[in-house]
Length: 244
Image 1: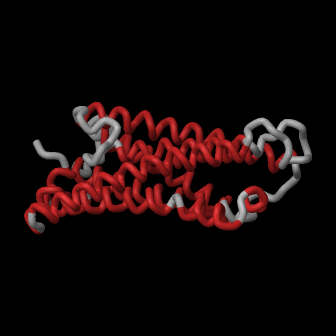
Image 2: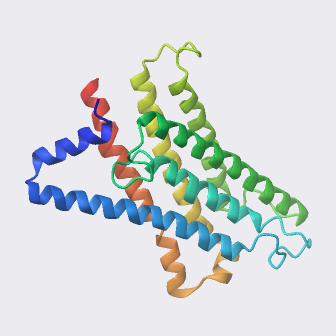
Image 3: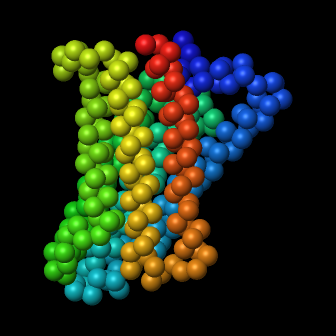
């Protein structure tokens, strides 16, 4: 049985000549490779800049809870969330030769890990603000972050419904549940991207990174978001329309 991505590739092949199709295929492979690389690179960059356990930024206490927050969020959303979605890409995914059941399990592992680490990161920033008597939800980054975490929890609930529709006695057909799950996942990823970009306007980040380096890291999250958006809209959503 063909996957959703294979249906999309066949449709593209029918509309293009073979030479154009192979160029298109290689461009897609290069884009997915770049998305993997940017996700890993951004996680490493933020981890190095945050220097977990240091107290240079949070002056109210020697043990800096704040420094763990960027590390947790980068690991959760730049790495786990990105890889959890790109698992289903046929263009040089890390497990492109594995059966779909294996990919689904690995997808679940990545998403559960992302949610757990993101919740831990939220705990660190709440503790840091409480120790320094700072206001909560005072910036766009913090507000977007809460929305992203709430959407992530809703996305996880949708995933449970997709996997266990009979156990939960849901009347909605599985294809429609999967469509809602995929669409919600796209919303979560876009929210996460906006939250990461908003974090780069914080005093902490701008005090460390300036000039062209700031612009480079600011634009880095955009490319994986475009790749993920293209994968979802071109591979999953059109196929759902055809099968309805």
